[in-house]
Image 1 (cartoon, each protein chain N blue to C red):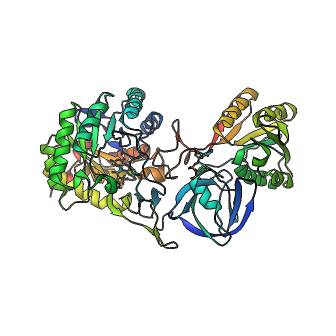
Image 2: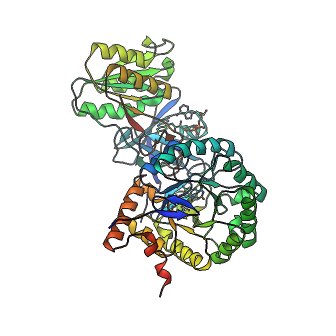
Length: 310
Length: 240
Ligand SMILES: Cc1cc2nc3c(=O)[nH]c(=O)nc-3n(C[C@H](O)[C@H](O)[C@H](O)COP(=O)(O)OP(=O)(O)OC[C@H]3O[C@@H](n4cnc5c(N)ncnc54)[C@H](O)[C@@H]3O)c2cc1C
Ligand SMILES: Cc1cc2nc3c(=O)[nH]c(=O)nc-3n(C[C@H](O)[C@H](O)[C@H](O)COP(=O)(O)O)c2cc1C
């Protein structure tokens, strides 16, 4: 039986549903190409803003046991340099058939529109709008993703600034993620990514009595957040008709199956790179294929969203 | 579920190696390969990568180049320092006939001292070329000699040993002696010259690179070098 792992995300073909999540390894064209060669079905760049940013001082990422906690603080070379990186990456990814998702952020609604417009000139396959980073509130104020009206405003501004398909990335740190999902769908999002990191959380060094992260608080990711991510994806999929990229704590084929059963069209993988390296994409893909074979599924659509049936 | 959080260790001794470099011995142990590194943290200051110069007891050799290393240099015996690791891929001791040629530039000599001790313990012949800009910045040459390595010192200004670059000295040595493998650590320009030398003389080489490191865990992508991550795929890379 032939196995089809491919996915259609907003008219873009992914050879398999596994997407490199933003902020993990997405800093250079050669790294993005390597992740694609290791088996990712799409790769997302590190979120890029209007101007270069140094990010927070170290420590920025810690393995606390159940996953990671990070406050990297959105370091990036700025959109002008990012356009070059993306253009090179697209060339290197083309022969592999792996699409590129360009992640953007800004401090203001107008800033989002400006970065979207500029990044579009590099012609990425999709744009991901990161309105949900929990680690820059001291400088930027509350993330736009915490409120349906602000989330919709950013979505509408980016929608007007580009003809490329846009994915809006949501935060789990809200009382009603469905309201936010509906708001961004109504404002013109072509897809939704969920979830960004949970929290913020804090880990204290008990010898010094000080929080370990220099930013004191940071976003929690990895296996510890998977049940929350799965629930968010499940709820969003029940409420909207646009495709959802399910992200959060996926480390193996079984976890990817779970996200797809919750209704995700594609599955983001981030923190799993810590334990598994870039090769983790090939491992998850092969485990997913093995699981499908063992259960007589020929394509992902045969079991996508089945958790909603009862 | 304890993860890999920084652990606190007390400084049990401090040695001034030269005007800019101190060696700190901690009351902690690790299981490390030469060339591996740890992330060293001072709460409220910063966290940066440093080569493990000995794992038993845990030892770092730290050059004062900026704000963080300034604060480390201000510590006294009995003070605490936090670390997590070991991380990365270290030097691999390669079989082969001939001498093991070590090339250290600046504080690159530090991780090579750890390697030299392992090589000498395994009974290998070691030639250590220790280079620096000037005499005052030479590092650990006496320690290499005490281990029974043949030491060749070279400085860019000729204030100690021969005048010239460590890689030029290495070329001369390789013409005279049979060399099994070249191991190098130092500034990027020196490592590029080592790569060319290994290609020219058809010698297997391993170089320890630096990169701008944040997480140290292979996720953030800050220390990329081509498709590789210095923190995970390195810091030691095979050349030649
Ligand atoms: C894998 C690895 C192993 C390392 N091992 C050691 C070690 O054993 N001992 C040691 O002393 N350092 C080592 N380093 C370098 C050390 O991490 C940096 O020097 C550190 O950034 C110093 O922090 P700082 O705040 O004092 O200075 P920074 O503010 O970071 O730097 C101050 C100035 O020094 C310059 N600088 C920074 N890093 C370097 C560098 N590596 N070489 C030359 N100039 C630099 C900067 O450009 C800046 O101008 C290692 C680095 C890596 C990646
Ligand atoms: C070190 C690190 C950096 C991150 N940076 C970004 C970022 O720049 N933009 C973004 O949208 N998400 C960022 N994220 C969030 C991830 O893309 C992802 O949504 C989250 O980590 C949950 O997935 P995971 O459990 O598979 O890691 C980052 C996560 C980590 C761990």
